[in-house]
Length: 251
Image (tube, rainbow, N blue to C red; front, side):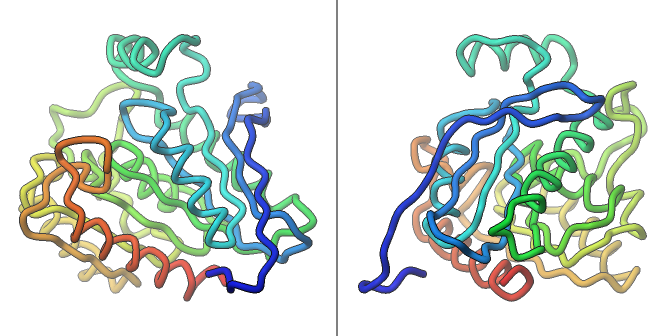
């Protein structure tokens, strides 16, 4: 957290990185000005898309001393408003898991290549981005910490699997490669409280380094301050849990 006698400056802009398969994709990038060294965070946007909330969150991380990058996971679908692109993605059954994992690894590698980076990078996502976060840190190494915010689809029935989502991330729990923080609302329907129980039981059974925080009177998306689902007290506490967790593992 900045001191009152610190210089404060921030760079925030859209950049282009080389994503999965060598494709050029856009990413929103924010960092405090200065020589560093800075920890890094990759933000995984939710199903509504590469939207204002996630770009604001990237700037929030920059204010707290992180280099933050949020790649556009829907880049290949085309461009328009967030709503227009989101409709196209839903019509196509989402984006392929392999492609998402590749894009997130590319974003991480971009951060690690910066001269002001401290060598540590975390991953955080909500909703579908929470699922993608857990999937990525189970399928790839090189992450120092991860935060799953109410990731729906970590626990999946066989009938829910598709060509683009061929595996339930919970089945990969043995390969979890870094400490995990989970933040959930007990009134959520995706994931349900029972699915969170199942997820936690598997982490515990395999002896993984994790901590889950679950909030009463909170459902899906309770951090989203621009929507009726926002729960102020629970969101404030959840952010404090994130700063503490990343502070321990990324600083």
